[in-house]
Image (cartoon, rainbow, N blue to C red; front, top):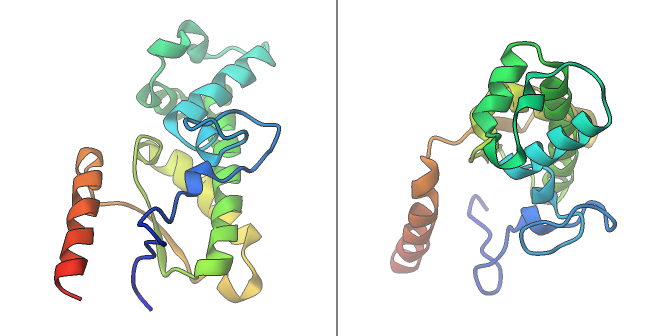
Length: 172
């Protein structure tokens, strides 16, 4: 209770590679419909380009190629009221919130911390994610799970995680 779940060989918690759509996008490990293909900075960019292709709405994001579009650009566009950027964040937050609600059903965490490029978009990802998380939680969990930004710096997270594993083995 109150401990990290490591799994049999310390590979537990790979939620990004759980398929949410067996016919969906490939994620970084080749999983069809893998969560990270939708709820990562790259996934957000993919959503932007899908929305742009299906819309004739004006968008400042039309001026970017895929490789030159970054999360900061999408956040800035959302800050400017760009309807494509706002819709992409809403879609991404919906997917993330729904999947986190499923995760809560079997793990019941006190808090979920978001880390990475997507989390840097602040309210644009946190607000729709929180809304969809709450809407999809079982009644017992509603209002009990915090969604928070991680205080870790992205580049330090892997090193700190590895250090925590060693610390826990040295200090049971």
